[in-house]
Image 1 (cartoon, rainbow, N blue to C red):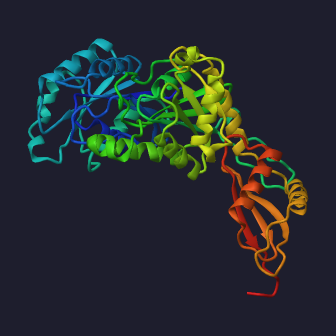
Image 2 (image 1 turned 180 degrees about the vertical axis):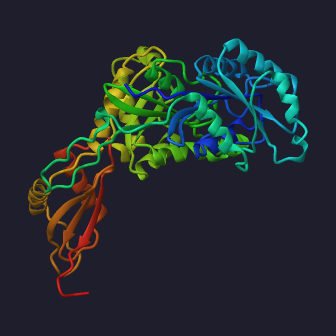
Image 3 (image 1 turned 90 degrees about the horizontal axis):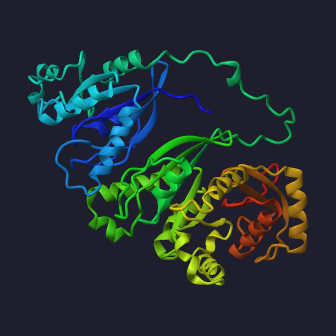
Length: 465
């Protein structure tokens, strides 16, 4: 199992700047930041490091104060759970507002949890905050640090105070951390080893993404509701399965552009973060609502994943609702899905129920197979022998006077698998012949769930510029 990192939890009432501070201390833009109170719903976790000490920083949703959010009770539950498991709590307060009743309320919760804590007075760059510091000593905590999360003022002192409380700096690597010996056969460049597989759970609103994440993690980490758009942030969690390290990201539901615009600033940013998560992940799990079927928006999400070169697994969720549809329904459903996602004929399709757990175990098994396939490298000699046979039996079209001959091929990259075909004259193939080669490469070598990139190059003759 991965080594446990000390947990540092940011708590505070809505709109005091917790998400801005989270982004500042982790060096990311993971948490959505707007002027709207209560933007963050789920618990965000991100590894952080300062002066050689590693810890996990957690941003909780706004726990106190008036809220019209129908999911506020769930937000409160998640926040209290994070507090109970924390190694250190950082109570973030707004220096401009001074001490307010909600701050006292949270301080009581912290004392009841009996966890180490300190206070970060935010927004001290505002003139109104200068006279507020003494007020917060009424909360009963020994240390109050003045910061500006937006501009970075005082955050170094805050980090110093954090690592003073959460553990010793990481030292030299232990024997267990020694890298494995390299393959002595230098004929083929080794494929990179994925120490951690990034899984992106994507799909339309209310398709069951958060329910699937909770099922895979075996805990209620994500807020689950029938209200579309429940998840706003791209929330990620690291976990180990069969001695393999994964990081799973539950993205905000991605809607059509018109509906995003009507959803306001928060939903617009949510879609941006979901798209960014696809770009940075390894495997995209496209969650399709089986009770609705495939839609244009599902195809758009899948297209983004294919364009980004990510491994793809298609999960038809809510399959428990489909049991009464008759014996031919599975075949009809899959045929319709494949027609709507013609460009994803290489992606495996799973029928599951995140709610009941039916066949959910197959998801991680398939993800692991796809991760291994997209990182596979074909030996050059084996590849060229195969390409020679294929192109001899089915030579590429020759649109000009010169006969096009394939000279040799090489795999130049993995994740996604990328091949270069060198010819005597052609710099590109007709799309139908390129598709033919890609399909034959896939039939021969596999590459389950991964797009394949194919480039054609004309071999330069020696002595010419």
